[in-house]
Length: 489
Image (tube, rainbow, N blue to C red; front, side):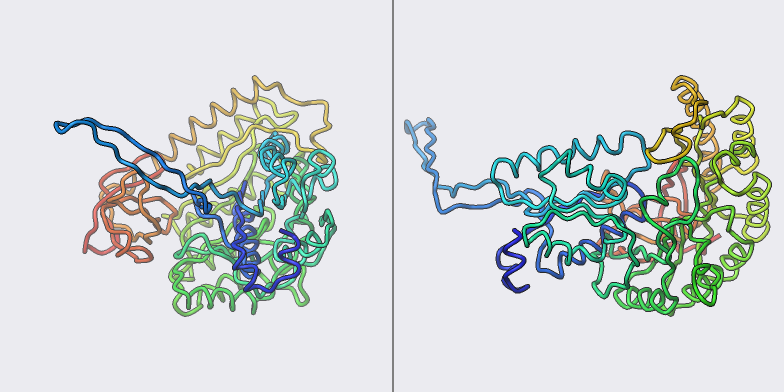
């Protein structure tokens, strides 16, 4: 593979039929990085492997079947070309290090591909993302068949790194790097909704989190570059854009002069032709009330806020190094309810953090009851490498952590059901994204709240359209209804 890339033009590489397969773990940031990686690969003439793609040889296989009918025995001979399932020439695993056993999952996934290389196949193995950044050279020691280890900051430079691989080098690219603007267009996974990075990295030092180590320091993109990318997406027919940042409210604080995320929201929200604008992820420490006001005052901004509060206990928040209190978080929620009473609020929560008492946990449940979130992503604390909390001696038992996780999840389901129940008999505007994979005669879309909605329709006709739907069924995590000409309520 390497020599083919190094010595041939883009057209010649394409003729070789070189293919790639990318597996993405983790968050929206990783999904966006994978789109950029795919854009780079396709600019090199390397295409994605098609499911069940086969390679046909010049050899033929003759089969004879004998059947009996009223006229006696009947023989039928068939000649078919021999074939085998095609395997990708380049394997990219874009990894996530947030959850426990992340490294073990990576090694397990790489096993069959490493065996291909040991068996003499010409395959290039790339490990990207946060585990790559975290483990670095250790990955090569464990799996010497890997060709390239690259951190998230190199997602738009994989073409250059593969050139080094083509020269016969094993490459580890994990050192800090300024993330350059990339002229290569990402290969979007949707034709309706797109991710747009606005800030990379994170300067926070939460004691449980490895993200600052793996994604580097904060680097905000210029407003002009963001607006140009969103404008180009609108010209291509995209209807919705989600602005991405590990800590999106920190946007602009590394710039001279400093910028505010609330101003960026208004600017991007006014791009002609854009129908919907979302953003993730907010941090209560930095999220200003101006952001809530900007969403309320920008017609394209969706009434949806994802604000991880992680714990309802001030003592645990302090131990986590979060830099905010429960009171600050509830102040933000109050502003959302004041300006946008119908808005959806979602969050992330960790239970069983070292030193968490039963009262600390009850404080978290208290915030759940006060806010009644539309959805909460919950997790029992798991020690991550190179994080301070992993070495503390006040770790909780797995039994306690799992008990608290079970109790909080019951409340999550209860509130999710209650929040969606209020949509019964309402008419909502749905942006149609895809077919309902379980019921092919239905389509799937989302409301401005982020609720999934299913209804009867032809995806070829409705993809990318805004459709009014009257809700007649409310489940825990989705809604269903029928198309209507009635106005949105």
